Amino acid sequence: MKIQLNTDHHLRGDESLSQHVEGVIDHSLGRYRDQVTRVEVHLRDVNGAKAGGGDKHCTIEARLEGRPPVAATEDADSMRAAISGAARKLQRVLGSSLGRLSG
Image (cartoon, rainbow, N blue to C red; front, side):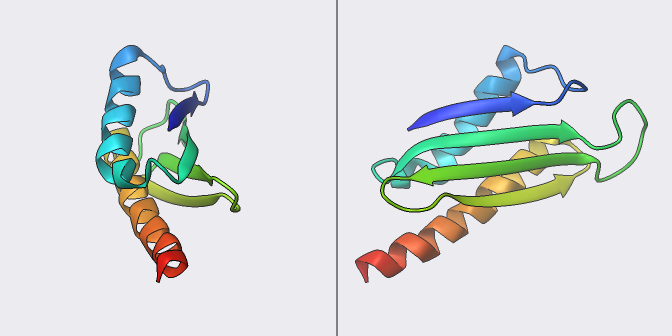
């Protein structure tokens, strides 16, 4: 499962952010590693340099082998919370859609 991280120009996509994203994705989606070929994580700061709550946005898209991609989004006060929230939502979506295939 390949993980691709994309950030807007307001965020610094440094190594610690990359490691955090990989850890959250591995923890949340690791059980689907055989079905997921690639995960794309898109991070952006909606307000840019301005202060404000709920302005961190994360979209996580999972590319499934032989199936259409699925995605989940989350807005939060911090980037870490947005990443975790989107990963939890995507975990539920994958569990539901892939569970129907095996059931």
